[in-house]
Image (cartoon, rainbow, N blue to C red; front, side):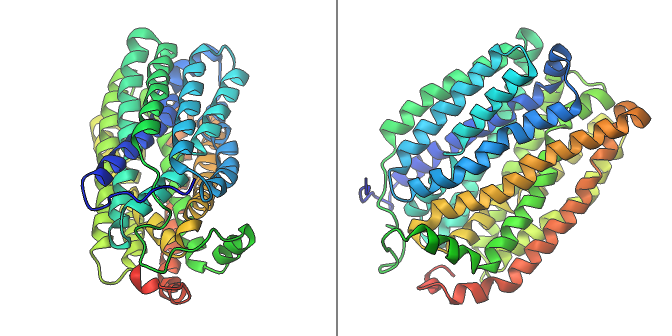
Length: 428
């Protein structure tokens, strides 16, 4: 289906953005619900930190990053709204099924199912948003959409922590998964599929190019790879630390799971939303568009000190305040990074481009980050006991610096890459 010309001047585009942001919220509720439930699940199923790292990272990320590419390619040639609705129904259904598992292997398979569903979520949604909003407002729109990450973390942690305390971790999965299946029907019936490229300058819209041409186009854009790698190493710390933070606070600071869910959800949710919105809003308003990468670089560097305080303080209240700051600074990058990637390709390459971007981001961040932290924690546990996570977390200081280096390199090649994109003056 080619879509229809929709009104992008009135309020409907904001309704679409709001609905897609809620889809992304469900995406992260279902993705992160396991994180807050890790300790009771570990106790009941007898798991190690390495197994928790697999469940919260690689089990989800494996097919998520692989299937995202062909699904996004399909989205560039078909109805993207239908793909988003179907994907939401699948991952929410698999989340509900997670409440019935009795072994590590069954939960592993359920998490793989969640990853399969979520593979069709963001790339088509990114492309829809880029058709509802013009180039000069895309980073802001995509940053608003990306706040769904932190709404999802906030709600997932709070709902998961409270329900787990009073009703058990299995009921928490049911309570999160079933509403998502119902919300998929709203997405299917309310959102209109726009014509691909309708918000681009006249003459920018072309036929969907062959796959080989799309890949060749991306391979030639150094900025894309620098930004994707910078985002990946930023996400290494976000997921590596974030997926073990509830366990860290429960073990080291001896906090109750409901308290951790509420406090951590609030700190990560509010901080992440502020940082995500600020990153896109600020960079969209700069004449020098290298700020799309500089804002991410600055966020990564600012994150270093509060991260170290978070890891080593003995004060639980201070630790929560540091989570607020780290969540804010590490969130600067996402909206601007997606906007940069979309600025380097035409309208009918965007979903595929987002899928490659998320392939790299999630392979490094979600796939390797939690697994690396889990392995390192298990290795250090004989010597440091419950403090093993504290020292395992320190590896993320180095990956954060590496992320900032990649964003700086991207800022040096951005304008050169823009010069070879037809009609690129409309984007800058």
